[in-house]
Length: 64
Image (cartoon, rainbow, N blue to C red; front, top):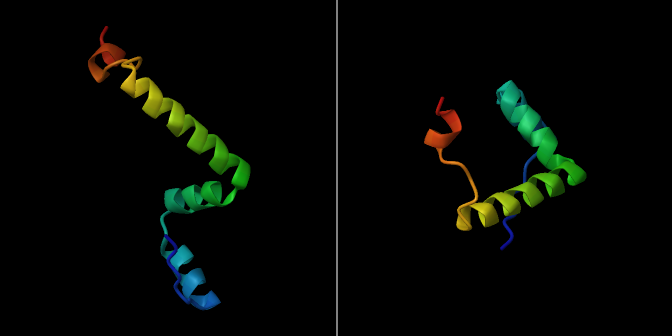
């Protein structure tokens, strides 16, 4: 599915100005193709390992 919205440069700039620093950092990472591919690959690994129950539970992770 594709969604198209017409925005002026000024509207885009204003939206970016209103973002919090963390949101701007996330946007920059998502716009970088190699980083985006790496994030997606890690997400796929996480989903697969969660299904195989290979992940530690929150309790196990923080147990002393």
